[in-house]
Image 1 (cartoon, rainbow, N blue to C red):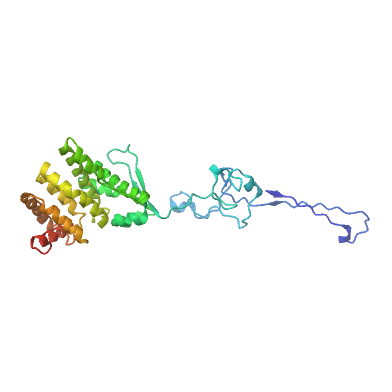
Image 2 (cartoon, one colour):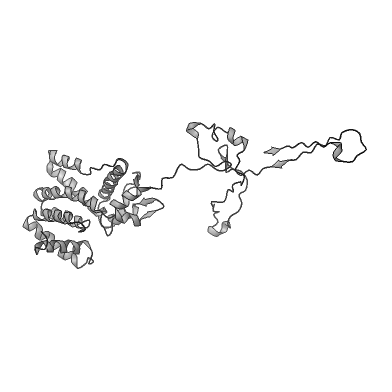
Length: 334
């Protein structure tokens, strides 16, 4: 933007024999540096100041945050204030946050939210990824192990799904379990209300084919327990575990009566990975579930736990569940 200055000097300023006024016209042309990254919606033309050697990263030039230097003069230009997208006369639907004389800024930050991303399915890449926006404190309170996996406000679940698939768990079951858990936590984050298993209980009670309904929800809860493992999953808080155990207390009985003892043992083994003994009411609830099992079901479960003691760590699910049930058998806990 050019500026023209006129300077008129009187003859009194200089000793001169001339009797007429001397009119001196001085044109001072000043060119203000264009420090706008965007003008009229297009990137600033011209060469950027070099910030690093382009050959340092395989020939690809990198941009830094200071590539577009801002003017120290904070006063906006007249053209900025008259622009329809900038200044006090900006259109409401196109209003942007912008420092005068600087680039447009992004929307307001949401530092209290974590974006949880469930990527595309490995077996079916046509399925789009799913994203959940959950409050950070609430996410870490319900899923303790997720705190170690968050990077730049994003929790990527691709590695968790791949690990579960490598352990021969069906991918569709793992993805359903993650959508189920994260969907309810997101609802709790937004509305403050969470009813995880109300629809499931209604479906099992009112279904004409109850065996099919119990089998469906038994497989679903198997996936939920796998993704909530403390060792290789997202972890499970006491509050979330209380919701799960309240539903499993009735589901275990239906699985035993309608599906058989083998299915009961498999589901209980998956449940052992999420169980913890930090609260007395959870331990008492485990004992109620255990006392309702038939003796042959209890023998099968204990046989599987003893076989896993050799391979499991001292603080693993097998040792934790074995110690808890042995205390019950010896009468130490009632």
